[in-house]
Length: 370
Image 1 (cartoon, rainbow, N blue to C red):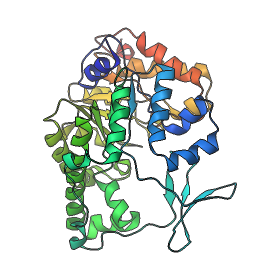
Image 2 (tube, one colour):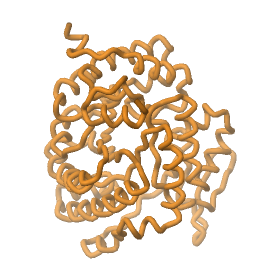
Image 3 (cartoon, rainbow, N blue to C red):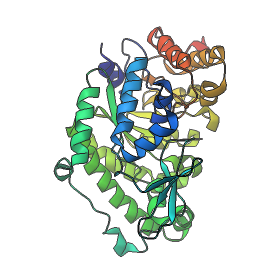
């Protein structure tokens, strides 16, 4: 069974030949593991966003994992100033610093100030909804398509159209204003989210035509809003997306960081195939997720990222064993981190994930219940 077959079966709730491993490799970890100059390559990846995908694919092959995420990347960011400590993006018109490179997180540029792009309902129409066929003519998609074709030779390929619910609203209204709007101007937020979902659908269709195997829907703010708000402001747009994309032979999963425990059933209602990352640092328990979601959706994740970063190899192996025991019985489980694979994680810990998962013997009942 190939990695692509294995991941698809597991993400659809089935029992493959072994438990797949998708450890959420991001390029900062890949840079370290591949022995490249960390600071220099992080800066280069901002100027050449295709390098991010190349590094992640190379790292995935180095480990022999089953799946990798390939991003639809931002435009090239230039006008950078490196003072030896921080790397700043400079506005060419004003000469002011507008963003800082995040060396310790995901390697993105962090804006210094939030911009309110959508000031009223009329502004929503300025968010362009570009159809998939037009997107495919863009050089950005053409280059990404070649990377996907290469990755699919031995990897299950995942992409993301970007956030479509509350997190998207924060990018066009600012975080503080968005959370005020949820109470005082909910209709504006809903119209923004409807537009964002239409944009995401077209991006995803374009990537599906390039050959990706799965779509990740991410909403990092899902873990900081309660079930009532999630039901009102997230579920309808996830459903809208899933209903459209389910027409294609593709897996769809939701990524909600932090404490997603109170949202499990609501996420399952959207029709997605899988829920992740089951972050133990947010209080999520793989056992609880498996019990409540069995027969509804597959699950992915659960390995403690702090242990991957700073724990001993034995501690990580025990944590992996816990995740497999609680999550893999009856299939429908993919071993992965509770969020992105830490930059500091040693290769031995990732190899332990692969060895343990690929040698796991499926049970009809959870080991912890025997």
